[in-house]
Image (cartoon, rainbow, N blue to C red; front, side, top):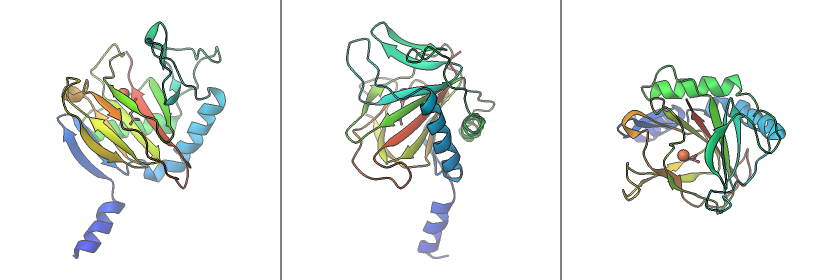
Length: 217
Ligand code: SIN
Ligand code: FE2
């Protein structure tokens, strides 16, 4: 087998790369269902639109967010929390589409976490220049379930650090279709996204959409 042929095979097959103890990067994992996912995001946003939330410290986040599932992650001047009601619409968040639940469970399984049943999905929209500073996902009541994070649209540089904010994060380029799963010893790892480079994605234009699946309790 030539190197070229090997490369094209490797590209066509989803791959599984361990990036830390309890963390895997699944390249191209959701590529086969990209249209269903994008359609589902459109339906969610039609019901609960993207909005830029305010941190407890009074800063407006550059990333715009919405949610689906039983509970949605929100932030305002009183703090961060999960809420079953979208404060913007006064109604429950849109239900989690079956295609979301299914991919989250399958991806978690690839990371060694069986039976993952997320009750929350945060939908992040990045435009060129927007970023998400290093943070831990720690507003959940139970850390036994992993985090499943799906990338769609423009490529991004994902920062994956250690258990302390000061630990120098490693950088991973995430492209459309990639999924990162972290749990167990990595569940509280610091992570973030570097400022998004400008570009044009064939399906999503000048943006990146990230889906973050969590079990909140
Ligand atoms: C997040 O940490 O909520 C999002 C990570 C990402 O956009 O890749
Ligand atoms: Fe996060």
